[in-house]
Image 1 (cartoon, rainbow, N blue to C red):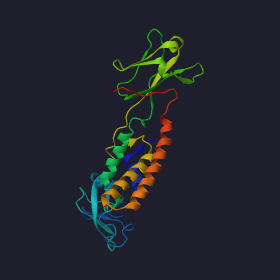
Image 2 (cartoon, rainbow, N blue to C red):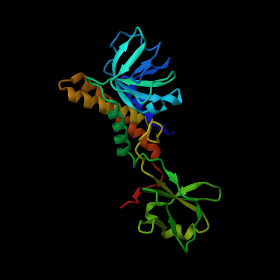
Image 3 (cartoon, helix red, strand yellow):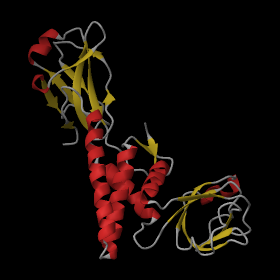
Image 4 (cartoon, helix red, strand yellow):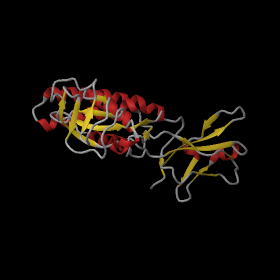
Length: 280
């Protein structure tokens, strides 16, 4: 199931134990304040220094604030207001939503979370790309090639369908990859026996980076959030120097993420499959 960048952001921040989501209850009087009668009852300055990511707007008048990052400068519990370090394009409106994350010590910045999401997507963009199915065609032994779309980055398998509608793999020893023509040729015994049967190719397209909060990826959410949080926590600990406790926690999280990655990869394996790059 596809996951948005915003959902990944929330998941990573949750793993780091640093996510606070606040909703404006009143319109702001200027471009630097955010009012919430329910959220800003904490001790003054308790949230100062946090990063503030503008998640959504409750009014078209503040829509141009969405997906902007600021830093919390002050909180005033008597007026229920939060003040940021730089103007938003428009005053905040009731119903607008902010996500607050720590921005000091062992913590990470908002842009670091976004970069880490894309780094991990790129790292697994080939092996975790969800398989896509090519068009079915009736196989002809006199013309034994099957074309794959130009958009494919990988050819993962070839299948034929029996009279009952069940698909079976054609194994790699009976196939010839012809990237110059963007085709796969069926050879040997299957070439003689599959004539008249439906055949198709299985491929994959590398996962693209996410640029907006609404952009989606099929990279597994559970693994990506845990892996990103573990790497960010480890990087933050190393920046701080002598931090054995934080490094230990980060390494435990990395071990859990690796185990999750190994189990997740099984769903991307195809019986009788292979992996040929179309970009070579």
